Length: 397
Image 1 (cartoon, rainbow, N blue to C red):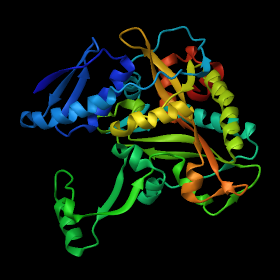
Image 2: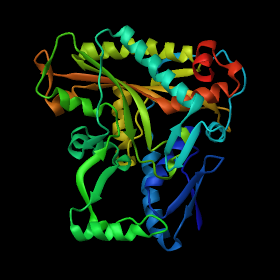
Image 3: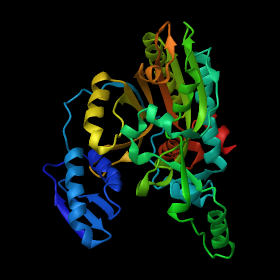
């Protein structure tokens, strides 16, 4: 069943894309929402027509929240690099890499990279890491688990901001009969048999949705040295995307090169500022068009306006945007491939660490490595001759 809902005004392509993406979390009976090409209505496919009234009520609230207009903040651009490659953007890159055997797509937002795609991911991570260590001599390499306590995410405010993206971890209850039932059900089954809900125990553990989170508890009770603290690592990150999973641009599980500053307000703000030219150099080495500008996170709809307003007003988030080609209206589609964020003393307060006797400030920089790979192949295609020579040797041999 398909229903059409008129919008109170024409909307921009970027907002249309966000509405389509976030609609996945409106109702389990909403199969698909598509904004009309005229940007003035939405077509909604329902899996169960009997649920139309319930879904419409949720949709009305959802659309009302998504269409709330924020004050017109000026977008500030900090970096804008142009690529030297003048050829057209490559299309359908993920499928073409699958056909080449460079990606094994498991489905549901999980992908294994191979060949030049994996070589490029390693090159990007290695290059970013080298740039960080060159600029920040005191940066320390760290490693953190992907499995985190739910309490950690609660203290980080994640359940309040992004409850739709959380991935809880469960296991079969420690009960002989429940475990045996599960074993027997799968012993001769033709397809996997999942245990019933009542046999799943949720022990309060989650898969980590933001690479920086696990580092903050390690500083609890400390007074950070006067020169501040800098840490960097590659983290595995998990965010539930429902039906929005799409190739390398929207994965459930992905890699992030993380950089965290902890110390005074001045130290963390200076760290973010000094990282900007490093992002510009990374984009330059890859010959990528790249923009870094003020932005806000994609918060859950009910709190999106308030939290986005705060982020934009305080200019605490700078987003790294890599173009992927034109929208139907001719404007450029850009993908967020990372961000540079100021947290104030939020984590210092939540995890009780200080800098110079005062609540500690933090900042972080994250690069979504699979998205950088996708953007690079989109901007340069599969002809090695289009790639910068230093990169070509690394990924094509």
